[in-house]
Length: 307
Image (cartoon, rainbow, N blue to C red; front, side, top):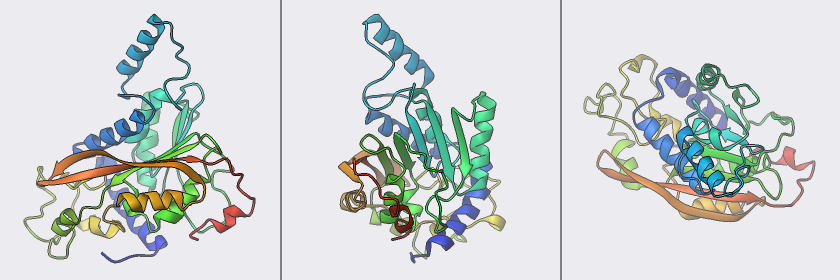
């Protein structure tokens, strides 16, 4: 796997995910997104993101005389503002929404953003509640795409392995957190050489008849890599291997990215969940850090882009 420049990598990912947007939701994509969302919610004492469970929890709390305006931990449906980075079609956002005040999804794929917003419209959600915009927060262009907006929580699920530089990305994302209270949570693959040797080496060609994208039983390891939809033809296919810059991460790599940002403290790295794919066990890491109280200097925004 060769390293690519951030611009080239972004363009490749955009083309791949624009082609996938309308057929993305389903199968293993949904399963892993649910596991990622569950792991995120568990960090704040929640067990499920379904509306029925939310209502049941509220009723139980009311019966016991507890206050409900601020559930366990950070999340507060009355005020918690969330940024879903690399939001895709909104699978993570949909699971988090019952627990928070608002969610802004950002993605560089216009196709994914369109599907995300279509879901919001179909659910009758306002833009103040949940919406997505197509913007590259990690781009080299000057200025702040979000006009100084800060968030209580930033989440990123199954996207870090597509990024060119996770250290730079982590620092940039941390600048969008509210100092002293904002949290960044990243859920992504733990490094597994066996899996990537099996599925992403040159011998495992996308022209190999054994690696059929029309086989309904074949799917890759994460929400972006499921190719079983028969509409997903080779004529517009970018091999998923070209969209990946990192074959997963170790605990130390994720801790170094967070602590090395100089803006995050109380960093934890843990195994969030595991699952079997093509006979290989895959583990996902959850990394969480809180924005320090240090006030970002005005000049820091200019310096943070790919430094």
